[in-house]
Structure formats: C-alpha cells, structure tokens
Image 1: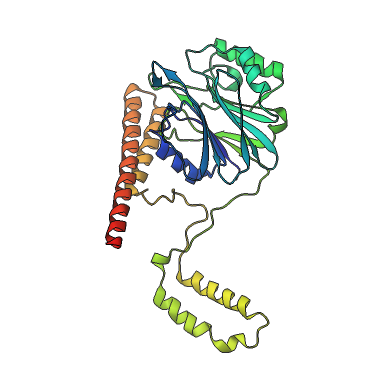
Image 2: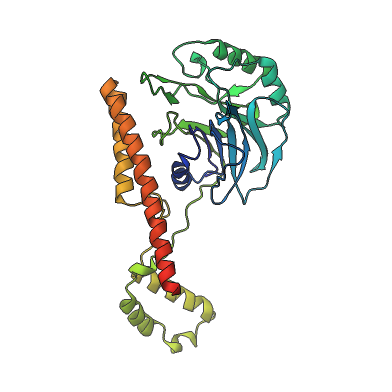
Length: 348
C-alpha cells in the first residue's frame, strides 16, 4: 500500500533501528520525520530511501530539525523553500503528483501565521503538511486550547485547508504521563478523500506515536514470498523430479517449456517452504526472539500505563523502552559481527 509515515522520532540516530522496523511493517513510500536532532555532518541513511533534511541547533547542539525519506524507486524532486521554519519538502509522483512537507515547531517557538502562509504558498498543490506543531486544540483531539492551537485553527480555516486528524492521541508526555494530540496532518481539500489516517499503537521508542496516512485507491502491495532453501527437503525434491519430469512427457505437449516450469514449480511447492507474503515480524536477520520479547514488553508496559496511569507504571514504561532500544541495538551489532567473522573465515 502507498503508506506515508509521519513521526516525531525524538532523535533519528537513536531510533534508526525502529525506523527500519517500521519499513518492514508498513512498506512506506515516504517518511516525514520531525525532531531528528541531526547535524549536517551526521552520516545517517536508510537502505532503499533517499533522505532530505533541514537542520537546527541550540548552543551548537543539534536540536529539532525535519527530514523526509522517500523510496529511491519513486520519481521525486526537492522543493526549494525560502523560510526560517524547520521544514523540508519534496514533490513525488504517485497516482497523481503531490507535495509532502515535514515541519517541526518547537514548544518554545511562537507560530507566525504569515510564515505559515509563506511556507504553504511555496508548496505546489496538492500538498500534505505533516508535523509536530506543539499546538493544542480540540479540533484535532487535544483536551485544551493554547495560543498555537488557535493560530493553526485560524490558518487552516482562512486558507481553506483540511485536517486528517480524527481526535486520536499522538503524544505521551514523558514527565507527567498525560496524552494529547499535537501532531497534525494538514492537506489540500482535493486529497482529503484519497487517504485514510490512523495512529500506530506503538510509540516505537519515541514519546510520539507514528501516524500512518494510507492511500485508499492503490492496489495492495504484498511482499513477494521467497523460497526457504535452507529448509527444503532436497531428497524428496530429487525423487519427485526423477518421477515427474520424464522426457517422454514433453514429446506430446504443445509447450514443453511451460509444462516443465509448471511441474517443477509444483514440486518446489511441495518440498520447499516459503516466507509469508505479509510477515508478522520484521524480516531482519538480526531480529531475534530477544528483540521480539523486548518490544513486546515495551508495548505491554505502555498499555499498562494507559490503563492505569500511575507514576510507577510510567517509570516502568521508560525502563522497558530503554531495554528494547538496547536489545535491538545489541542484536544488530552481534549479527553484523557474526556475519563479518563468517565472511572472514570463508575468504581465508
């Protein structure tokens, strides 16, 4: 499916592993990320995606920032923006050509309506503006108003734009454990009916939930199943080939090559298992049972806090989140070391 993921990742480097897991789960055509906390010198990449970023610093320390990752097989181009807002935009061709813009507005910043209008005027229509605005308004699900929320509401109304948000919470405050909705997805009216909008059920190591706008009118993409050759029953495969691929059977058929392929595929189906078209767990070689357990514990602790929002449950959630991050990082590091060692031995 033509998914797009919007996410305040609270540090791209620290949550890059989570990004790779989101790729496996959603196969997104693009990521719009906020609060990436990158420096221009940082070497960060995601296999199969091109990356475009804007950077921000506070006292020479990386802070804020926005990035967009877009699949490298999708026709796209950058949109040059003249703005001091932390925003980055690309133009990409799907069933129609659209513009994606990722924006981050820090809690301490004042939203300037004129700057927002200047930004959207530079975005070729139709566009989707995705970001963490740190703005509260019941219009998109917050329980309270703040000044930023009122400005965004007025801006959207005056410009004739639409909001995808359905009222779901998008943010868990790490200090007091309160839920709110400060991540907003704004679009041209022409795109409102083209996408569904939902919040992922896992924070994925951040304190913001990933948001998944999904295109409604594209055919579902399924992962192409692969043969598990290491689990094949090769003796049975050989016996069936000897029994069913007799030379005389090809003398009377109209298309010998088609017949051969059909019979061979049938034998393979009976003797070689395949991967799932839609795997439950990410098909990462390093993603082991310990990773699965750690992420499961993180999800359970978040649900437990959601049901019983106590200080103890919030603290436990932070502990399990850190443990999941360490476990996945260690598993990937160990997997890479084992692979390197194996290659070294094979080349000796």
